[in-house]
Image 1 (tube, rainbow, N blue to C red):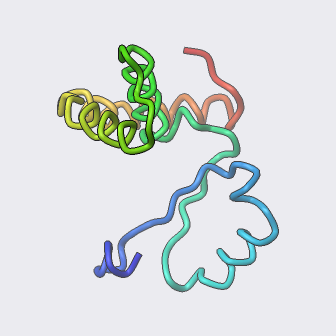
Image 2 (image 1 turned 180 degrees about the vertical axis):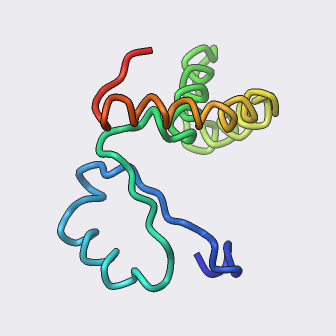
Length: 115
């Protein structure tokens, strides 16, 4: 975190998935809490994380590949290519949608939401 955000303004975000909320992970967060700010994230809210949305887009593109990649290096190459093909406007739209998604999440008090 200190390398990426030397200004001290970086925040660590995680989705409270079971592995991230384990005793070991929780202990680590407490031990390192002075190293970064931890952004509270409602449990099991992957739709609030733009990385999850992008991952789904990449997986969809991967599923449409013919032939599918067979080796790990081929998979890596395809994923990098698909990442580069994501239109900047698509990524900007995801960022701009965050206020609406946060407002919706607040309305349902962190529960599941319908689109």
